[in-house]
Amino acid sequence: MIKANIILDSSKWKNKIKNPNNYFKKKLIKLSKIPYLKKKKQEFSILLTNNKKIKDLNYKFRKKNKPTDVLSFQSNDKDYIGDIAISYEMINRKSKLSNFFLELDKIWIHGYFHLNGYDHKKIKDFKKMVKKENLVLSYLYKIN
Image (cartoon, rainbow, N blue to C red; front, side):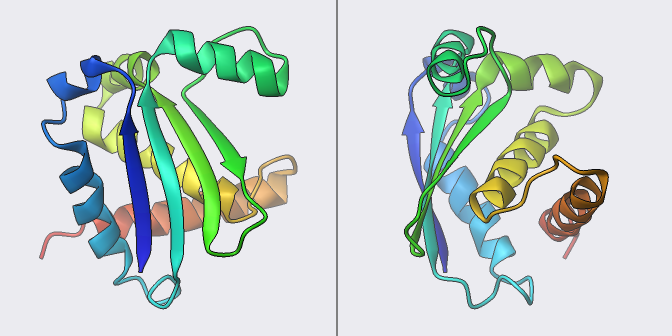
């Protein structure tokens, strides 16, 4: 089973998600029904943070002095695959044109694929990654 450790670093998240642990647990249960993810035993952490913290992390690790929506830090461990940091303000801003939860799911799934070795430096890799992300989103939003 895929397991996520949720770290709440900004109280703003509570305005949208009353119980972040339950929210992600339900999403991961749905993920476990996807055939190619069914047998995966992985663990990772999601830091739900704000623009200031993600800007600091972005500068420290990528030398970019600006906030971003998501950062992924891949681990070399096959069971603990790494960490994802997500900015509340960036997700909230993106969601003005769609839906907060959809934007959040798009972003953490994007981070999850980075933890699994996917990137989007080349157009063919970008297309492959987007295809996988869209497949996962279709499972998460499937009406049963």
